[in-house]
Image 1 (spheres, rainbow, N blue to C red):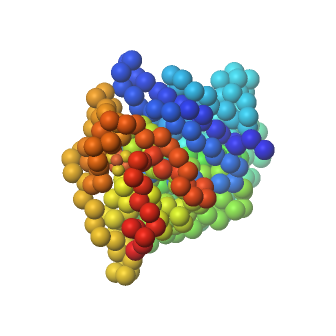
Image 2: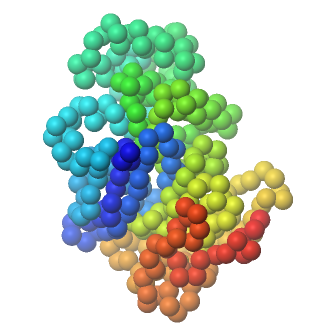
Image 3: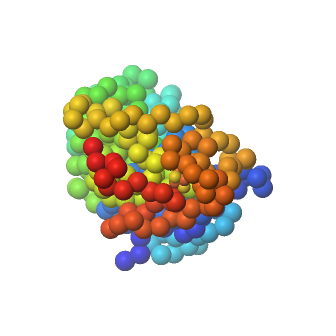
Length: 317
Ligand code: SF4
Ligand code: MG
């Protein structure tokens, strides 16, 4: 079975010089929950736009169920738009401010020319399933809590029977208890509707909580990919290790020695030579500024782009 969405060696260059993505391959299999991690400027947004067909790769290919994305869009643009939906970071702002929830959740039916009666019945069921109060239907977006606005956005996707959900910072701005509830709900819906998730987040606790595989990006490249369990247990890339070391953990025994990265992420217009991370890497050696590291396997399902990857004994917490 081909992946539901696959990027192969995708590069996106803006204006001939801004390398937003460089040789990125990413496979999303049906039913998977994949996490995408990286600072702003790492290319996460461009990657999401590319896999949603909102921007064309400069080189490389994107396929949907094995079919080139361009062909799929030409054949069935609306169908693809139904199947793959994005949840934006600012849920309230992503909902039209002058529409009541009722209109907001019925609008996708209209756009996709689906029968209103069937859709309304489905909305009733989903409203309860998502734990939204019945009176939510009469509210405007600004009258919803952050958690409710996210549920409405999810409802808009589920009413269309979307299969793939790309969620950008799904819990940003929510209280910790509401975050937990929302993530549990997303996990339940994932199981119930066999959804595929790509979760884009800075919040490593979110990534750890719900994803099974994680991809770490830095300056337009994948620098590490692993099962989420392996990534958190034994990160192999110094950048991943640095991110994990700054992640707040409750259990003091699991706290890692904090690795402070110096400086900002460099500009994609003026990329560092050799390893793109060498200007900030605590392990950088002379070779790192000269020789470009390739992504290579360091264990079951784990790949890293580094000349001197960390080994298990170095990172044991
Ligand atoms: Fe650091 Fe060198 Fe590895 Fe790059 S290749 S991450 S600079 S050790
Ligand atoms: Mg972004």
